[in-house]
Image 1 (tube, rainbow, N blue to C red):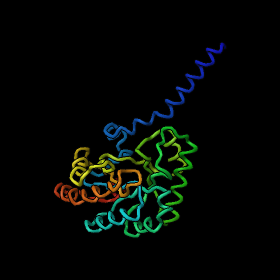
Image 2 (cartoon, one colour):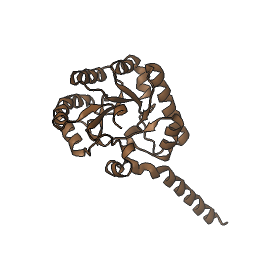
Image 3 (cartoon, rainbow, N blue to C red):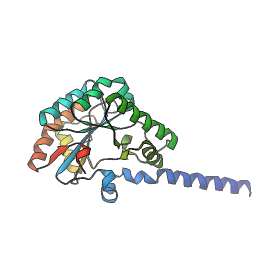
Image 4 (spheres, one colour):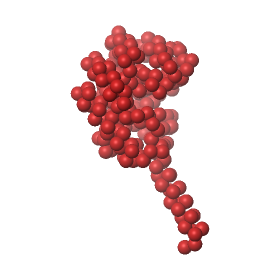
Length: 239
């Protein structure tokens, strides 16, 4: 084979490998995955809202979210980062002690799309073991950072023994300038029925103090969901 042919062959092989790696990224398309992959998207009982929070635990904001959930009589699922769990183990334990479900968001908040299967597997398993050992709670769910799903994500999930879950509706509460009303309106706008709702109990990867809008949205959401006869709870009750 000529040098040019070798180069073309290498380019084709690289392109094929990249395509295989990135093919599952379609699951990151929120609207499409609700139709094509409803369980992974998080569509469950039509009378139920699975309320989930990402990026904690944080010793300032997470307890305030927990207090609000206690007041509303809600339980939720918290997708925690292993790195934050080690920094704030007492806050992690408080989530579990208050009856909420813990889940895995990875060791670090890095996009999987350009990470190898070995790297992602180590990341997910390290976070799983950290959160499980510090809390004493068995874990079932994994949500990748940014909801980005690649072939490496699927390998990491399989090796960790966790179930992949994304979301159907979100408040985009990580952005600056959000209010409780704008977060609640965004949740409504993206709702599909049988929703898994994504919010954040920490600003470690978001705009500073973005969790204040998250907190303010909860009472608004409570009023709207109650008017629709919806029950709010964790993922463990959603399917």
